Image (cartoon, rainbow, N blue to C red):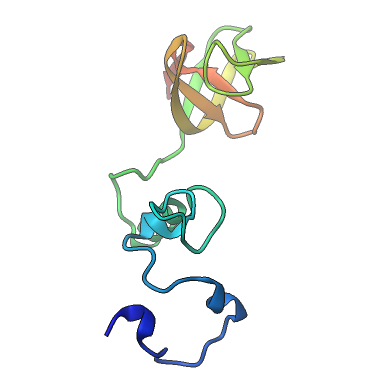
Length: 134
């Protein structure tokens, strides 16, 4: 018997259950419709399954893998541009970091730097080439 033909073991508690084809996501990463090879899945938002795995790894206390841990950087130049997206080819916000310590919550590749860091404040992205990890 295929999983989609099996009856539920308990009462259905979510009325949205009927909208999802059972067994359509062989992997947790495929729970998002955008990542599912057949365009099926539970969530319309991108990266849904990956987000679940990050939360699960945090609960289990797992380290390594693709669990990102925020860290602090020291910026010693007063005029480090903050950009809306990672890359010198992306729009500037019109603001600068100033000198000081900042929290990086995400990293990304982009033109013009070996790595870009997203500021915890939500102000944007900075080139990590001009920062020193604290």
